Length: 534
Ligand code: GDG
Image (cartoon, rainbow, N blue to C red; front, side, top):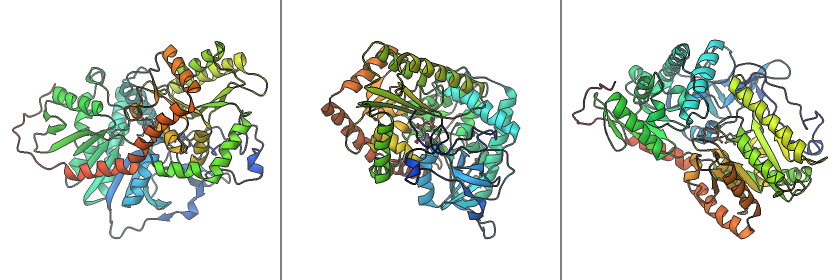
């Protein structure tokens, strides 16, 4: 296996249970080769001493309030037993951090674990307000309703959603607490931006508490078609919760249309195109805002000496294969990791790809480890990789290099730089930032992207080798084509994709959402029906 350095695991992962502590350096516990002569690419948790509590004058509050399930930092236990903070990975963090810094707002969210509620504090120039979660909240609100009901339901039933009334009750309670916290921190007439499926009731709850606020909501995952959404016993409450916002943002136009259609059918409000007219005179807009990345930041990182050096070192450690395939995903059943590895293995089995020629690096970032389905998925993937390496590997040359860990951004950039073929094959994905990050790092216009049609990113990255992840043969053909494509073809495609990603970066995404949010809302003079719905 490649001695990639791990990002030291937090003592309390989501759910407050200990995660496997990762050794520094190589997976065997010895320092990686590079670690002996160079400062490792690693993020370190910082202890509490560095944190300044925010001084609020007379209960002063914020003009911009971000409300998300997670804070951009995790509460972790340090080696000496004291508590500290560590920047956490994830799509939302990557996207929101620059917006927060530019606007100097406050971010409300859960730092992981079950510590009691802490005072707001400043970290890395960002003001953060931690929310507490009890073990019951984690089990019923987070692992239960959010990840056991909504996540599979919103991802095309890739897994079977479970409906439990006590999970729903917990979802309502936690949403209420988030809404109350936001109401207490927002200045008069402030803008509040609520994020994602865990907090869909917050907009309406917050509007009831603070009618003066301008409220935006953004859904990072897909919004399902009516045929699936209507299975949800609490469908109407969710729709009404979202309608508390002035602007409801989605990744893709289809999701916004699904929402408007459901509001018309299930709540009975009058709608016209992307607008919903409420009986109280408010107008709500539902529109697509495809999220992106800090493209310039990724490119700069990829160009840095440290990352270039590290990327060469990775290829060297892999045994200098001619081609490197790469997958980087949270270990989630929506991401299609199993199917892509099977496709790769079949190509090896059929002699199209030789292990002396090509290897696959699969990074599987630990995720939702307390949820049964995720543990089963991990076992299945690890069994498959064992079989692939047993069948196709040679001494010192495994076919698949599997890394179950998370890494600092620089290490990710080094992997993106080291990879000739990036393989992103989710069954369903709101956007998929990994695909865009890969493109941003390929500043030499090389590198092939194999991308699922069912990732939101496929709408923009049309020049990728697009695949249906349910079609293993189709996926094999695309992998092979990408592997064999000549440089000219690869460059033509990558150039076009780079143009798209650099021109539509996360700054543009946030700016367009904020601009729309400041434009919408207010009254209408429509004669609307009182909600009848169902
Ligand atoms: C949700 C939606 C939507 C991953 N491992 C590490 C790490 N990451 C970063 C990646 C990327 C992000 O996490 C993952 O984002 P994705 O978009 O690929 O997927 P989700 O986590 O499922 O995100 C998704 C997204 O929200 C944003 O709206 O695109 O559809 O499902 O940025 O780089 N970062 C670091 N170390 C890791 O080990 N530092």
